[in-house]
Length: 246
Image (tube, rainbow, N blue to C red; front, top):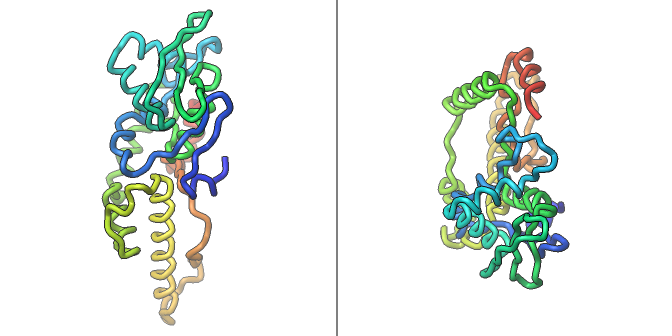
C-alpha cells in the first residue's frame, strides 16, 4: 500500500469491494469503539482450523448477537462510506454483505482479510500478539503495564492541541484530517522539536556527546510502532516469547 496515498488521505480501491476510506478525526471516537472488531483474528480465540476464516468467526457472532451485528455494520459503513448494507448468505451457507457504494461491492470471507489489512494500515492499528501459553500472555501483560507506568500519556486531544498550536489554526480545522494525517504531523513536529533540543545541548562546549547521535529533523518516522518490541529486557525471556507468538 502506498504511504503517500495514506498521507494524502486518499481511499484504497479493492477489487470486488470498492474504495476503502481512512477514518477522519470527526469519526474517530465512533471508530475507536469498533476497531477491536477489525484488530482481532481467529488465532486470538485459539482457532487453528484452516477451514475457518476470520470473517466466519465475526459473522457467527454477528448472527447470534444483534449488538455485534450492529457494530460490524457500523464499522463497514464508516470505512466504506456507504449508507446501505445488505446481509446475504451464499449457497454454502456463508454470510457476507452487499455494499451499496459508488460501485456495488461485496464483503465476503474470501476478501475480508485484504479489507482488514487495508483498514489497519490506513488507521495505524497494530494487531495484538497471539500468545500460545497463558503464562507468557500474563507475563507480557505485566510488562506492558510496567512500561506504561514509566511512559508519558498523550491522548488524541493532546495531539490535536499540539498540532493546532504549532500551526496557529483552530481545533475544528482538523476534523477532516484522517487519523493517519494527524499522527504523521504530530510525529514530525515531535521529531523537529527533539532535533532542536539536541542542537541546543550539542552547543554546550563542556558536555561530552561523543556517544550520542544527533537526531535529524527530517529522518524517517515510524507511525506504526510495535508496542511489543523490546518488551522484555531479559533476552532469554524474549526468546521464550518469540517461540510462543505466532
